[in-house]
Length: 132
Length: 506
Image 1 (cartoon, each protein chain N blue to C red):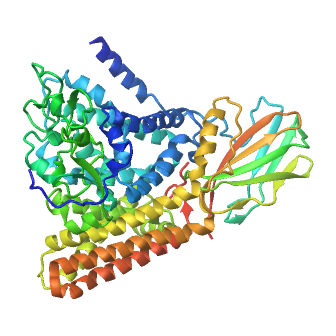
Image 2 (cartoon, each protein chain N blue to C red):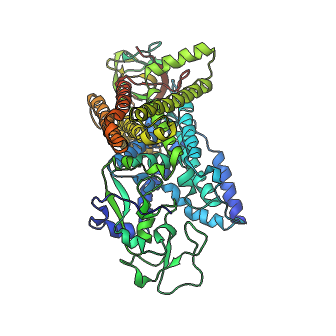
Image 3 (cartoon, each protein chain N blue to C red):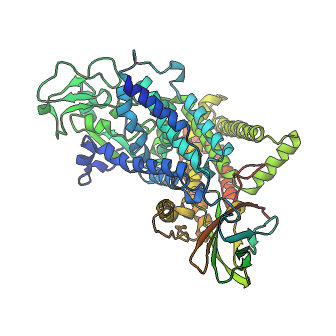
Protein backbone atom coordinates (compact mmCIF):
# COMPACT_ATOMS: atom_id res chain seq x y z
CA UNK A 1 0.00 0.00 0.00
CA UNK A 2 2.85 2.36 0.90
CA UNK A 3 4.41 1.91 -2.54
CA UNK A 4 1.06 2.64 -4.22
CA UNK A 5 0.67 5.87 -2.25
CA UNK A 6 4.21 6.95 -3.16
CA UNK A 7 3.49 6.20 -6.81
CA UNK A 8 0.29 8.28 -6.79
CA UNK A 9 2.06 11.15 -5.00
CA UNK A 10 4.77 11.06 -7.65
CA UNK A 11 2.10 11.36 -10.32
CA UNK A 12 0.67 14.39 -8.52
CA UNK A 13 4.07 16.08 -8.48
CA UNK A 14 4.15 15.79 -12.26
CA UNK A 15 0.98 17.86 -12.46
CA UNK A 16 2.91 20.72 -10.92
CA UNK A 17 5.30 20.85 -13.88
CA UNK A 18 5.16 24.05 -15.87
CA UNK A 19 7.69 25.92 -17.96
CA UNK A 20 10.33 27.90 -16.10
CA UNK A 21 10.61 31.65 -16.37
CA UNK A 22 13.19 32.06 -19.07
CA UNK A 23 16.45 33.49 -17.87
CA UNK A 24 16.83 35.54 -21.03
CA UNK A 25 13.29 36.61 -21.63
CA UNK A 26 13.75 40.33 -21.61
CA UNK A 27 14.50 43.09 -24.03
CA UNK A 28 16.46 45.13 -21.53
CA UNK A 29 19.09 43.95 -19.09
CA UNK A 30 18.68 43.31 -15.40
CA UNK A 31 18.02 46.44 -13.32
CA UNK A 32 20.84 45.47 -10.95
CA UNK A 33 23.47 45.37 -13.69
CA UNK A 34 25.56 48.45 -14.43
CA UNK A 35 25.14 47.64 -18.12
CA UNK A 36 21.86 48.43 -19.85
CA UNK A 37 21.08 47.19 -23.35
CA UNK A 38 18.09 47.61 -25.61
CA UNK A 39 17.38 45.88 -28.90
CA UNK A 40 15.30 47.74 -31.45
CA UNK A 41 13.78 46.38 -34.64
CA UNK A 42 11.85 48.37 -37.25
CA UNK A 43 8.15 48.75 -36.57
CA UNK A 44 6.20 46.07 -38.51
CA UNK A 45 9.28 44.21 -39.71
CA UNK A 46 9.04 42.70 -43.17
CA UNK A 47 10.74 39.98 -45.14
CA UNK A 48 14.24 40.75 -46.38
CA UNK A 49 17.15 42.79 -45.06
CA UNK A 50 16.38 44.74 -41.90
CA UNK A 51 18.56 46.91 -39.72
CA UNK A 52 18.50 45.86 -36.08
CA UNK A 53 19.90 48.26 -33.51
CA UNK A 54 21.36 47.61 -30.08
CA UNK A 55 21.88 50.46 -27.63
CA UNK A 56 24.43 49.80 -24.93
CA UNK A 57 25.04 51.85 -21.77
CA UNK A 58 27.35 51.34 -18.82
CA UNK A 59 26.60 53.48 -15.78
CA UNK A 60 24.37 55.59 -18.04
CA UNK A 61 27.22 56.27 -20.48
CA UNK A 62 27.38 54.87 -24.01
CA UNK A 63 29.50 51.74 -24.02
CA UNK A 64 31.95 51.32 -26.86
CA UNK A 65 33.93 48.28 -28.02
CA UNK A 66 31.40 45.52 -27.36
CA UNK A 67 30.99 42.47 -29.57
CA UNK A 68 27.36 41.76 -30.46
CA UNK A 69 25.89 38.80 -32.31
CA UNK A 70 22.19 38.57 -33.11
CA UNK A 71 20.58 35.24 -33.98
CA UNK A 72 17.08 35.00 -35.40
CA UNK A 73 15.20 31.73 -34.97
CA UNK A 74 11.76 30.79 -36.20
CA UNK A 75 9.45 29.31 -33.60
CA UNK A 76 9.47 26.02 -35.53
CA UNK A 77 12.44 23.85 -34.73
CA UNK A 78 14.87 23.22 -37.51
CA UNK A 79 14.48 26.36 -39.57
CA UNK A 80 17.87 27.73 -40.53
CA UNK A 81 18.81 30.47 -38.04
CA UNK A 82 19.87 33.89 -39.29
CA UNK A 83 23.06 35.03 -37.59
CA UNK A 84 24.54 38.51 -37.97
CA UNK A 85 27.05 40.69 -36.16
CA UNK A 86 26.00 44.17 -35.06
CA UNK A 87 28.82 46.64 -35.65
CA UNK A 88 29.31 49.90 -33.79
CA UNK A 89 28.07 52.77 -35.96
CA UNK A 90 28.40 55.41 -33.26
CA UNK A 91 29.40 55.26 -29.63
CA UNK A 92 27.05 52.90 -27.81
CA UNK A 93 24.96 52.14 -30.91
CA UNK A 94 25.47 48.85 -32.75
CA UNK A 95 23.65 47.95 -35.94
CA UNK A 96 23.41 44.97 -38.24
CA UNK A 97 24.04 45.36 -41.97
CA UNK A 98 23.18 41.90 -43.20
CA UNK A 99 20.39 40.59 -41.01
CA UNK A 100 17.68 39.16 -43.23
CA UNK A 101 14.28 37.85 -42.22
CA UNK A 102 14.16 34.90 -44.59
CA UNK A 103 10.61 33.83 -43.86
CA UNK A 104 7.35 35.37 -42.73
CA UNK A 105 6.08 34.30 -39.33
CA UNK A 106 7.07 34.29 -35.68
CA UNK A 107 10.71 35.02 -34.85
CA UNK A 108 12.79 35.01 -31.71
CA UNK A 109 15.86 37.25 -31.68
CA UNK A 110 18.67 36.26 -29.34
CA UNK A 111 21.26 38.97 -28.84
CA UNK A 112 24.55 37.98 -27.24
CA UNK A 113 26.64 40.92 -26.04
CA UNK A 114 30.24 40.57 -24.89
CA UNK A 115 31.45 43.75 -23.24
CA UNK A 116 35.09 44.90 -23.29
CA UNK A 117 35.32 43.90 -19.61
CA UNK A 118 34.35 40.33 -20.53
CA UNK A 119 30.77 40.39 -19.25
CA UNK A 120 28.35 38.34 -21.34
CA UNK A 121 24.74 39.42 -21.63
CA UNK A 122 21.98 37.59 -23.49
CA UNK A 123 18.72 39.26 -24.50
CA UNK A 124 15.66 37.83 -26.16
CA UNK A 125 13.01 39.53 -28.25
CA UNK A 126 9.98 37.97 -29.95
CA UNK A 127 8.31 39.44 -33.01
CA UNK A 128 6.17 38.59 -36.00
CA UNK A 129 7.33 39.28 -39.53
CA UNK A 130 4.72 40.01 -42.16
CA UNK A 131 4.84 38.36 -45.58
CA UNK A 132 5.13 40.42 -48.75
CA UNK B 1 -7.82 -17.43 -37.84
CA UNK B 2 -7.34 -16.49 -41.49
CA UNK B 3 -6.06 -19.06 -43.98
CA UNK B 4 -2.40 -19.16 -44.95
CA UNK B 5 -1.85 -16.73 -47.83
CA UNK B 6 0.61 -15.80 -50.52
CA UNK B 7 3.50 -13.84 -49.05
CA UNK B 8 6.42 -11.93 -50.54
CA UNK B 9 9.43 -14.13 -51.19
CA UNK B 10 12.23 -11.60 -51.36
CA UNK B 11 15.56 -11.82 -49.58
CA UNK B 12 15.24 -12.67 -45.88
CA UNK B 13 16.98 -9.86 -43.99
CA UNK B 14 17.50 -12.19 -41.02
CA UNK B 15 20.04 -14.07 -43.12
CA UNK B 16 22.43 -11.11 -42.92
CA UNK B 17 25.34 -12.02 -40.63
CA UNK B 18 24.46 -11.75 -36.94
CA UNK B 19 20.95 -10.36 -37.45
CA UNK B 20 19.01 -13.55 -36.67
CA UNK B 21 21.03 -14.17 -33.49
CA UNK B 22 20.48 -10.57 -32.41
CA UNK B 23 16.74 -10.57 -33.06
CA UNK B 24 16.19 -13.96 -31.37
CA UNK B 25 18.08 -12.78 -28.30
CA UNK B 26 15.51 -12.33 -25.52
CA UNK B 27 16.54 -8.76 -24.69
CA UNK B 28 17.08 -7.47 -28.22
CA UNK B 29 14.02 -5.24 -28.15
CA UNK B 30 15.21 -3.50 -25.02
CA UNK B 31 18.43 -2.79 -26.88
CA UNK B 32 16.43 -1.17 -29.70
CA UNK B 33 14.31 0.82 -27.22
CA UNK B 34 17.19 2.17 -25.21
CA UNK B 35 18.19 5.08 -27.51
CA UNK B 36 14.64 6.44 -27.68
CA UNK B 37 14.20 5.96 -23.94
CA UNK B 38 17.31 8.07 -23.33
CA UNK B 39 16.04 10.65 -25.83
CA UNK B 40 12.67 10.74 -24.04
CA UNK B 41 14.43 11.56 -20.78
CA UNK B 42 16.24 14.46 -22.49
CA UNK B 43 12.91 15.59 -24.01
CA UNK B 44 11.17 15.69 -20.65
CA UNK B 45 14.07 17.34 -18.79
CA UNK B 46 14.74 20.02 -21.42
CA UNK B 47 11.05 20.51 -22.14
CA UNK B 48 10.32 21.40 -18.54
CA UNK B 49 13.56 23.00 -17.41
CA UNK B 50 15.27 24.17 -20.60
CA UNK B 51 15.09 27.35 -22.59
CA UNK B 52 11.56 27.70 -23.97
CA UNK B 53 12.63 28.37 -27.55
CA UNK B 54 11.62 25.58 -29.89
CA UNK B 55 14.69 25.56 -32.17
CA UNK B 56 17.00 25.46 -29.14
CA UNK B 57 15.26 22.85 -27.06
CA UNK B 58 15.78 19.09 -27.30
CA UNK B 59 12.04 18.47 -26.80
CA UNK B 60 10.73 20.40 -29.78
CA UNK B 61 13.66 19.82 -32.11
CA UNK B 62 14.03 16.09 -31.60
CA UNK B 63 10.29 15.35 -31.56
CA UNK B 64 8.98 17.61 -34.32
CA UNK B 65 12.02 17.60 -36.54
CA UNK B 66 14.30 14.62 -36.16
CA UNK B 67 11.86 11.95 -34.98
CA UNK B 68 9.36 12.68 -37.76
CA UNK B 69 12.09 12.85 -40.38
CA UNK B 70 13.61 9.54 -39.36
CA UNK B 71 10.12 7.94 -39.16
CA UNK B 72 9.34 8.57 -42.83
CA UNK B 73 12.88 7.67 -43.93
CA UNK B 74 12.67 4.38 -42.02
CA UNK B 75 9.19 3.61 -43.36
CA UNK B 76 10.23 4.32 -46.94
CA UNK B 77 13.54 2.48 -46.87
CA UNK B 78 13.05 -0.28 -44.32
CA UNK B 79 9.89 -0.69 -42.27
CA UNK B 80 8.23 0.15 -38.97
CA UNK B 81 11.51 0.69 -37.13
CA UNK B 82 10.11 3.27 -34.74
CA UNK B 83 7.43 0.97 -33.29
CA UNK B 84 10.19 -1.60 -32.93
CA UNK B 85 12.23 0.88 -30.92
CA UNK B 86 9.26 2.43 -29.11
CA UNK B 87 10.17 3.20 -25.48
CA UNK B 88 6.50 3.44 -24.45
CA UNK B 89 6.45 -0.34 -24.23
CA UNK B 90 9.03 -0.18 -21.46
CA UNK B 91 6.10 0.64 -19.18
CA UNK B 92 5.20 -3.03 -19.60
CA UNK B 93 7.08 -4.09 -16.46
CA UNK B 94 5.17 -1.59 -14.35
CA UNK B 95 1.85 -2.39 -16.04
CA UNK B 96 2.35 -6.11 -15.39
CA UNK B 97 2.99 -5.32 -11.73
CA UNK B 98 -0.07 -3.05 -11.56
CA UNK B 99 -2.21 -5.73 -13.25
CA UNK B 100 -1.73 -7.87 -10.15
CA UNK B 101 -3.45 -5.19 -8.08
CA UNK B 102 -6.55 -5.25 -10.24
CA UNK B 103 -9.50 -7.43 -9.30
CA UNK B 104 -9.65 -8.70 -12.89
CA UNK B 105 -8.39 -8.04 -16.40
CA UNK B 106 -10.80 -5.85 -18.36
CA UNK B 107 -11.56 -6.46 -22.03
CA UNK B 108 -11.27 -3.65 -24.56
CA UNK B 109 -14.86 -2.71 -25.53
CA UNK B 110 -16.00 -4.44 -28.70
CA UNK B 111 -17.29 -1.15 -30.11
CA UNK B 112 -13.73 0.20 -29.99
CA UNK B 113 -12.08 -2.85 -31.55
CA UNK B 114 -11.60 -1.08 -34.87
CA UNK B 115 -9.70 1.86 -36.25
CA UNK B 116 -12.49 4.43 -35.87
CA UNK B 117 -11.50 5.28 -32.31
CA UNK B 118 -7.82 5.67 -33.09
CA UNK B 119 -8.66 7.65 -36.25
CA UNK B 120 -10.58 10.07 -34.05
CA UNK B 121 -7.60 10.11 -31.70
CA UNK B 122 -5.27 10.84 -34.60
CA UNK B 123 -7.43 13.75 -35.73
CA UNK B 124 -7.58 15.06 -32.17
CA UNK B 125 -3.81 14.82 -32.08
CA UNK B 126 -3.45 16.83 -35.31
CA UNK B 127 -6.00 19.36 -34.08
CA UNK B 128 -4.14 19.76 -30.78
CA UNK B 129 -0.90 20.16 -32.69
CA UNK B 130 -2.31 23.08 -34.66
CA UNK B 131 -4.42 24.66 -31.94
CA UNK B 132 -1.81 24.64 -29.18
CA UNK B 133 1.21 25.15 -31.49
CA UNK B 134 2.88 22.10 -30.00
CA UNK B 135 5.78 22.51 -32.40
CA UNK B 136 6.61 25.85 -30.75
CA UNK B 137 6.28 24.77 -27.14
CA UNK B 138 8.98 22.67 -25.44
CA UNK B 139 7.03 22.25 -22.22
CA UNK B 140 3.84 21.15 -23.96
CA UNK B 141 5.91 18.72 -26.01
CA UNK B 142 7.35 17.32 -22.77
CA UNK B 143 3.81 16.96 -21.46
CA UNK B 144 2.87 15.15 -24.64
CA UNK B 145 5.69 12.66 -24.04
CA UNK B 146 4.50 12.10 -20.48
CA UNK B 147 0.95 11.75 -21.79
CA UNK B 148 2.06 8.99 -24.16
CA UNK B 149 3.90 7.09 -21.44
CA UNK B 150 1.00 7.48 -18.99
CA UNK B 151 -1.65 6.42 -21.50
CA UNK B 152 0.36 3.38 -22.55
CA UNK B 153 0.75 2.44 -18.90
CA UNK B 154 -2.93 2.89 -18.04
CA UNK B 155 -4.32 1.16 -21.14
CA UNK B 156 -1.96 -1.80 -20.99
CA UNK B 157 -2.58 -2.16 -17.25
CA UNK B 158 -6.36 -2.26 -17.53
CA UNK B 159 -6.54 -4.17 -20.80
CA UNK B 160 -4.57 -6.97 -22.48
CA UNK B 161 -1.06 -6.11 -23.64
CA UNK B 162 -1.01 -4.73 -27.15
CA UNK B 163 -4.35 -2.92 -26.79
CA UNK B 164 -2.60 0.44 -26.65
CA UNK B 165 -0.55 -0.21 -29.81
CA UNK B 166 -3.42 -1.53 -31.85
CA UNK B 167 -6.37 0.62 -30.82
CA UNK B 168 -5.08 3.77 -29.13
CA UNK B 169 -1.61 4.94 -30.14
CA UNK B 170 -1.75 7.67 -32.82
CA UNK B 171 1.96 7.41 -33.60
CA UNK B 172 1.79 3.65 -33.91
CA UNK B 173 -1.21 3.74 -36.20
CA UNK B 174 0.44 6.35 -38.42
CA UNK B 175 3.37 3.93 -38.66
CA UNK B 176 1.09 0.91 -39.23
CA UNK B 177 -0.72 2.64 -42.04
CA UNK B 178 2.34 3.92 -43.86
CA UNK B 179 4.41 0.79 -43.31
CA UNK B 180 2.17 -0.42 -46.15
CA UNK B 181 4.71 1.52 -48.27
CA UNK B 182 7.68 -0.27 -46.70
CA UNK B 183 9.88 -2.69 -48.58
CA UNK B 184 9.92 -5.37 -45.88
CA UNK B 185 7.41 -7.62 -44.13
CA UNK B 186 7.29 -10.48 -41.63
CA UNK B 187 6.65 -13.78 -43.42
CA UNK B 188 6.90 -17.51 -42.78
CA UNK B 189 9.97 -19.20 -44.23
CA UNK B 190 8.10 -22.46 -44.91
CA UNK B 191 4.30 -22.49 -44.82
CA UNK B 192 4.23 -26.27 -44.38
CA UNK B 193 6.00 -25.87 -41.04
CA UNK B 194 3.20 -23.50 -39.96
CA UNK B 195 0.51 -25.89 -41.21
CA UNK B 196 1.87 -28.65 -39.00
CA UNK B 197 2.43 -26.39 -36.00
CA UNK B 198 -0.14 -27.21 -33.32
CA UNK B 199 0.52 -24.54 -30.68
CA UNK B 200 1.04 -21.43 -32.85
CA UNK B 201 3.69 -19.97 -30.48
CA UNK B 202 4.24 -16.99 -32.79
CA UNK B 203 0.69 -15.97 -31.91
CA UNK B 204 0.20 -17.41 -28.42
CA UNK B 205 3.71 -17.50 -27.02
CA UNK B 206 5.60 -20.45 -25.59
CA UNK B 207 7.36 -21.52 -22.45
CA UNK B 208 10.59 -23.43 -22.81
CA UNK B 209 12.78 -25.07 -20.22
CA UNK B 210 14.40 -28.44 -19.48
CA UNK B 211 11.38 -29.52 -17.44
CA UNK B 212 7.78 -28.38 -17.48
CA UNK B 213 6.84 -26.14 -14.52
CA UNK B 214 3.65 -26.80 -12.55
CA UNK B 215 2.13 -23.51 -13.66
CA UNK B 216 2.54 -21.87 -17.05
CA UNK B 217 1.82 -18.27 -18.08
CA UNK B 218 -1.35 -17.56 -20.03
CA UNK B 219 -1.38 -17.41 -23.82
CA UNK B 220 -0.74 -14.00 -25.35
CA UNK B 221 -4.10 -13.96 -27.14
CA UNK B 222 -6.05 -16.66 -25.40
CA UNK B 223 -7.38 -17.79 -22.03
CA UNK B 224 -5.47 -21.06 -21.76
CA UNK B 225 -2.00 -21.76 -20.45
CA UNK B 226 0.71 -21.18 -22.99
CA UNK B 227 2.32 -24.15 -24.72
CA UNK B 228 5.30 -25.83 -23.09
CA UNK B 229 7.94 -26.72 -25.65
CA UNK B 230 11.03 -28.44 -24.23
CA UNK B 231 14.41 -26.99 -25.11
CA UNK B 232 15.30 -30.15 -26.99
CA UNK B 233 12.63 -29.31 -29.58
CA UNK B 234 13.79 -25.75 -30.19
CA UNK B 235 15.65 -25.14 -33.41
CA UNK B 236 18.45 -22.66 -32.75
CA UNK B 237 17.74 -22.46 -29.03
CA UNK B 238 17.41 -18.89 -27.80
CA UNK B 239 17.02 -19.36 -24.07
CA UNK B 240 14.72 -20.43 -21.27
CA UNK B 241 11.46 -19.00 -20.02
CA UNK B 242 8.36 -17.38 -21.48
CA UNK B 243 8.47 -15.99 -25.00
CA UNK B 244 5.30 -13.95 -25.68
CA UNK B 245 3.54 -14.19 -29.02
CA UNK B 246 2.09 -11.43 -31.15
CA UNK B 247 0.35 -8.88 -28.94
CA UNK B 248 -1.57 -7.46 -31.89
CA UNK B 249 -2.95 -10.85 -32.83
CA UNK B 250 -1.09 -11.52 -36.09
CA UNK B 251 -0.45 -15.10 -37.21
CA UNK B 252 2.77 -15.11 -39.24
CA UNK B 253 1.81 -17.22 -42.33
CA UNK B 254 -1.38 -15.19 -42.85
CA UNK B 255 0.28 -11.76 -42.82
CA UNK B 256 -0.12 -9.84 -46.07
CA UNK B 257 0.08 -6.40 -44.56
CA UNK B 258 2.26 -4.50 -42.11
CA UNK B 259 -0.93 -3.15 -40.50
CA UNK B 260 -0.71 -3.73 -36.72
CA UNK B 261 2.81 -5.18 -36.99
CA UNK B 262 5.05 -3.34 -34.52
CA UNK B 263 8.22 -5.12 -35.67
CA UNK B 264 8.62 -6.23 -32.05
CA UNK B 265 9.84 -9.58 -33.41
CA UNK B 266 8.10 -11.53 -30.62
CA UNK B 267 7.12 -14.00 -33.35
CA UNK B 268 10.76 -14.51 -34.31
CA UNK B 269 11.74 -15.27 -30.73
CA UNK B 270 8.68 -17.39 -29.98
CA UNK B 271 8.80 -19.60 -33.07
CA UNK B 272 10.40 -22.88 -31.91
CA UNK B 273 11.19 -23.82 -35.51
CA UNK B 274 13.05 -20.63 -36.40
CA UNK B 275 10.61 -20.26 -39.28
CA UNK B 276 10.03 -16.50 -39.35
CA UNK B 277 11.60 -14.25 -41.99
CA UNK B 278 11.78 -10.53 -42.61
CA UNK B 279 11.31 -10.57 -46.36
CA UNK B 280 12.11 -7.83 -48.83
CA UNK B 281 9.14 -6.93 -51.02
CA UNK B 282 8.32 -4.21 -53.56
CA UNK B 283 6.98 -1.10 -51.76
CA UNK B 284 3.67 -1.38 -53.62
CA UNK B 285 3.21 -5.11 -52.89
CA UNK B 286 0.69 -4.64 -50.10
CA UNK B 287 -1.44 -2.10 -51.97
CA UNK B 288 -2.02 -4.63 -54.74
CA UNK B 289 -3.10 -7.47 -52.43
CA UNK B 290 -6.08 -5.65 -50.91
CA UNK B 291 -5.23 -6.94 -47.41
CA UNK B 292 -7.36 -4.40 -45.52
CA UNK B 293 -10.49 -5.97 -46.98
CA UNK B 294 -9.78 -8.86 -44.59
CA UNK B 295 -8.23 -7.10 -41.60
CA UNK B 296 -9.38 -3.67 -40.51
CA UNK B 297 -11.76 -3.15 -43.43
CA UNK B 298 -13.54 0.18 -43.93
CA UNK B 299 -12.22 1.96 -40.79
CA UNK B 300 -8.62 1.35 -41.87
CA UNK B 301 -9.28 2.78 -45.32
CA UNK B 302 -11.05 5.80 -43.87
CA UNK B 303 -8.03 6.32 -41.61
CA UNK B 304 -5.78 6.05 -44.67
CA UNK B 305 -7.70 8.63 -46.67
CA UNK B 306 -8.05 11.03 -43.73
CA UNK B 307 -4.35 10.79 -42.98
CA UNK B 308 -3.66 11.80 -46.56
CA UNK B 309 -6.05 14.73 -46.26
CA UNK B 310 -4.48 15.92 -43.01
CA UNK B 311 -1.06 15.47 -44.54
CA UNK B 312 -2.08 18.14 -47.01
CA UNK B 313 -3.64 20.32 -44.34
CA UNK B 314 -0.60 20.04 -42.09
CA UNK B 315 1.49 21.53 -44.89
CA UNK B 316 -1.10 24.04 -46.06
CA UNK B 317 -1.23 25.47 -42.53
CA UNK B 318 2.34 26.70 -43.11
CA UNK B 319 1.81 28.73 -46.28
CA UNK B 320 0.41 32.25 -46.78
CA UNK B 321 -2.80 31.35 -48.69
CA UNK B 322 -3.99 29.43 -45.62
CA UNK B 323 -3.75 32.50 -43.41
CA UNK B 324 -5.51 34.66 -45.99
CA UNK B 325 -8.33 32.17 -46.39
CA UNK B 326 -8.64 31.60 -42.64
CA UNK B 327 -8.92 35.33 -42.14
CA UNK B 328 -11.57 35.47 -44.86
CA UNK B 329 -13.58 32.71 -43.12
CA UNK B 330 -13.22 34.44 -39.76
CA UNK B 331 -14.33 37.79 -41.22
CA UNK B 332 -17.28 36.17 -42.97
CA UNK B 333 -18.44 34.54 -39.73
CA UNK B 334 -17.66 37.66 -37.67
CA UNK B 335 -15.55 35.64 -35.30
CA UNK B 336 -12.03 35.68 -33.94
CA UNK B 337 -12.33 32.22 -32.44
CA UNK B 338 -9.48 30.08 -33.71
CA UNK B 339 -11.20 27.05 -32.23
CA UNK B 340 -14.17 27.60 -34.52
CA UNK B 341 -12.20 28.41 -37.67
CA UNK B 342 -9.76 25.52 -37.17
CA UNK B 343 -12.64 23.13 -36.50
CA UNK B 344 -14.30 24.21 -39.73
CA UNK B 345 -11.07 23.66 -41.64
CA UNK B 346 -10.64 20.17 -40.17
CA UNK B 347 -14.24 19.29 -40.92
CA UNK B 348 -14.06 20.78 -44.42
CA UNK B 349 -10.87 18.93 -45.30
CA UNK B 350 -12.33 15.64 -44.04
CA UNK B 351 -15.54 16.02 -46.03
CA UNK B 352 -13.78 17.17 -49.22
CA UNK B 353 -11.08 14.51 -48.95
CA UNK B 354 -13.43 11.60 -48.31
CA UNK B 355 -15.88 12.85 -50.97
CA UNK B 356 -13.27 13.33 -53.70
CA UNK B 357 -11.62 9.97 -53.12
CA UNK B 358 -15.03 8.26 -53.17
CA UNK B 359 -16.29 10.15 -56.22
CA UNK B 360 -13.23 9.30 -58.32
CA UNK B 361 -13.32 5.70 -57.09
CA UNK B 362 -16.98 5.38 -58.09
CA UNK B 363 -16.24 6.97 -61.49
CA UNK B 364 -13.46 4.43 -62.00
CA UNK B 365 -15.79 1.57 -61.08
CA UNK B 366 -18.49 2.92 -63.39
CA UNK B 367 -15.98 3.30 -66.23
CA UNK B 368 -14.98 -0.31 -65.65
CA UNK B 369 -18.60 -1.44 -65.70
CA UNK B 370 -18.91 -2.43 -62.04
CA UNK B 371 -21.96 -0.36 -61.14
CA UNK B 372 -22.58 2.19 -58.40
CA UNK B 373 -21.22 0.70 -55.17
CA UNK B 374 -19.44 3.52 -53.30
CA UNK B 375 -18.16 1.43 -50.37
CA UNK B 376 -16.68 -1.28 -52.59
CA UNK B 377 -15.16 1.34 -54.89
CA UNK B 378 -13.71 3.24 -51.93
CA UNK B 379 -12.14 0.07 -50.55
CA UNK B 380 -10.77 -0.95 -53.95
CA UNK B 381 -9.10 2.35 -54.86
CA UNK B 382 -8.29 3.73 -51.40
CA UNK B 383 -4.75 2.33 -51.59
CA UNK B 384 -4.04 4.87 -54.34
CA UNK B 385 -4.85 7.71 -51.94
CA UNK B 386 -2.71 6.08 -49.26
CA UNK B 387 0.26 5.96 -51.66
CA UNK B 388 -0.22 9.64 -52.48
CA UNK B 389 -0.53 10.47 -48.79
CA UNK B 390 2.69 8.72 -47.88
CA UNK B 391 4.53 10.57 -50.64
CA UNK B 392 3.29 13.91 -49.42
CA UNK B 393 3.97 13.28 -45.72
CA UNK B 394 7.46 12.12 -46.65
CA UNK B 395 8.09 15.22 -48.77
CA UNK B 396 6.84 17.52 -46.00
CA UNK B 397 8.69 15.87 -43.13
CA UNK B 398 11.87 15.63 -45.17
CA UNK B 399 11.66 19.33 -45.97
CA UNK B 400 11.95 20.12 -42.26
CA UNK B 401 14.43 17.34 -41.60
CA UNK B 402 16.78 18.37 -44.38
CA UNK B 403 16.47 22.01 -43.34
CA UNK B 404 17.51 21.39 -39.77
CA UNK B 405 18.88 17.88 -39.29
CA UNK B 406 22.35 19.00 -38.22
CA UNK B 407 20.91 21.33 -35.59
CA UNK B 408 20.75 18.33 -33.27
CA UNK B 409 24.45 18.90 -32.49
CA UNK B 410 24.21 22.54 -31.28
CA UNK B 411 20.90 21.72 -29.58
CA UNK B 412 22.53 19.06 -27.41
CA UNK B 413 25.52 21.35 -26.87
CA UNK B 414 23.05 24.02 -25.75
CA UNK B 415 21.39 21.53 -23.38
CA UNK B 416 24.63 21.31 -21.47
CA UNK B 417 25.67 24.95 -21.98
CA UNK B 418 22.34 26.07 -20.48
CA UNK B 419 23.16 24.03 -17.42
CA UNK B 420 26.52 25.64 -16.84
CA UNK B 421 28.91 23.63 -18.98
CA UNK B 422 31.49 25.66 -20.88
CA UNK B 423 30.30 24.84 -24.40
CA UNK B 424 29.65 27.31 -27.19
CA UNK B 425 27.05 25.79 -29.56
CA UNK B 426 27.64 26.40 -33.24
CA UNK B 427 24.17 27.47 -34.36
CA UNK B 428 25.32 27.79 -37.96
CA UNK B 429 25.19 24.01 -38.08
CA UNK B 430 21.67 23.26 -39.26
CA UNK B 431 21.02 22.46 -42.89
CA UNK B 432 21.66 19.02 -44.28
CA UNK B 433 21.36 20.15 -47.90
CA UNK B 434 21.50 23.62 -49.51
CA UNK B 435 18.18 25.50 -49.58
CA UNK B 436 18.02 25.43 -53.35
CA UNK B 437 17.86 21.63 -53.28
CA UNK B 438 14.81 21.52 -51.01
CA UNK B 439 12.07 22.12 -53.54
CA UNK B 440 13.45 19.75 -56.22
CA UNK B 441 13.95 17.05 -53.59
CA UNK B 442 10.55 17.33 -51.92
CA UNK B 443 8.64 17.84 -55.17
CA UNK B 444 10.59 14.91 -56.60
CA UNK B 445 9.58 12.62 -53.72
CA UNK B 446 5.94 13.67 -53.94
CA UNK B 447 5.98 13.10 -57.71
CA UNK B 448 7.73 9.74 -57.35
CA UNK B 449 4.92 8.49 -55.13
CA UNK B 450 2.38 9.93 -57.59
CA UNK B 451 3.96 7.67 -60.22
CA UNK B 452 3.83 4.77 -57.76
CA UNK B 453 0.16 5.55 -57.09
CA UNK B 454 -0.43 5.56 -60.87
CA UNK B 455 1.23 2.17 -61.13
CA UNK B 456 -1.00 0.86 -58.33
CA UNK B 457 -4.11 2.30 -60.02
CA UNK B 458 -3.17 0.69 -63.35
CA UNK B 459 -2.47 -2.70 -61.72
CA UNK B 460 -5.75 -2.61 -59.74
CA UNK B 461 -7.74 -1.70 -62.83
CA UNK B 462 -6.18 -4.50 -64.91
CA UNK B 463 -6.66 -6.95 -62.00
CA UNK B 464 -10.31 -6.18 -61.30
CA UNK B 465 -11.63 -5.00 -64.67
CA UNK B 466 -9.68 -7.11 -67.17
CA UNK B 467 -10.39 -5.69 -70.67
CA UNK B 468 -12.24 -2.65 -69.30
CA UNK B 469 -9.27 -1.86 -67.10
CA UNK B 470 -7.95 0.63 -69.66
CA UNK B 471 -11.16 2.61 -69.10
CA UNK B 472 -11.38 2.13 -65.32
CA UNK B 473 -7.91 3.49 -64.67
CA UNK B 474 -8.53 6.95 -66.17
CA UNK B 475 -10.61 8.58 -63.43
CA UNK B 476 -7.98 7.50 -60.91
CA UNK B 477 -5.12 8.77 -63.08
CA UNK B 478 -6.87 12.15 -63.32
CA UNK B 479 -7.35 12.11 -59.53
CA UNK B 480 -3.64 11.38 -59.05
CA UNK B 481 -2.69 14.18 -61.44
CA UNK B 482 -4.86 16.69 -59.55
CA UNK B 483 -3.39 15.58 -56.23
CA UNK B 484 0.18 15.67 -57.54
CA UNK B 485 -0.17 19.16 -59.03
CA UNK B 486 -1.81 20.46 -55.86
CA UNK B 487 0.91 18.86 -53.73
CA UNK B 488 3.74 20.36 -55.77
CA UNK B 489 1.98 23.75 -55.68
CA UNK B 490 1.91 23.58 -51.87
CA UNK B 491 5.58 22.62 -51.73
CA UNK B 492 6.42 25.52 -54.06
CA UNK B 493 4.83 28.14 -51.79
CA UNK B 494 7.02 30.22 -49.48
CA UNK B 495 6.65 29.06 -45.92
CA UNK B 496 5.06 31.30 -43.34
CA UNK B 497 5.66 29.99 -39.87
CA UNK B 498 3.03 31.74 -37.84
CA UNK B 499 1.69 30.38 -34.59
CA UNK B 500 -1.97 30.67 -35.29
CA UNK B 501 -4.33 32.36 -37.65
CA UNK B 502 -4.93 35.25 -35.32
CA UNK B 503 -1.95 35.47 -33.01
CA UNK B 504 1.69 34.42 -32.79
CA UNK B 505 2.83 31.22 -31.14
CA UNK B 506 4.35 33.01 -28.14
